[in-house]
Amino acid sequence: MTASIRTPTLARAIAEIAEGGLADRIRLETAARIVATARRAAAQAPLPAAAMADPAVQAVTEIARHWDAGAVTALEYAETLPVAALERLLRAAPRWAAAFAPRMDRLAA
Image (cartoon, rainbow, N blue to C red; front, side, top):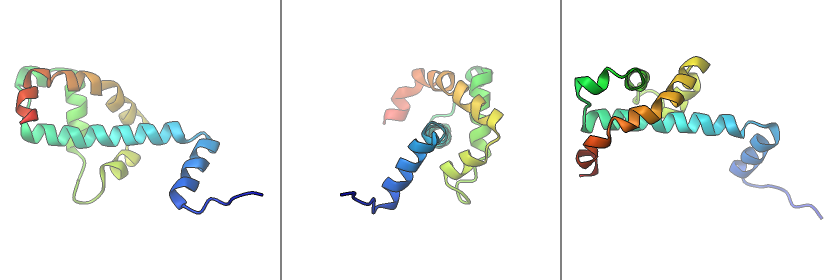
């Protein structure tokens, strides 16, 4: 006896795994989280000019700045990024996040 999959979310997840698209979906979701986090962090605890000189910080900041949160979700925005911009965002995010280490007290409040 075979059971059918009745929830669209479960069916979509299984299809993504079967088609090998899960890794791409995870990358897009990660990019969306980075963009949303970068926008929130910039509003709450802007980085000093010295940190902004880091190319990784510039990359994340620039990509996040172009997201129109009123028009599309962060995930929808990430889906529109060219592959090169997506790769750049994902590579730069750890250094961008490290630039906030001295400012974590401001973000935690």
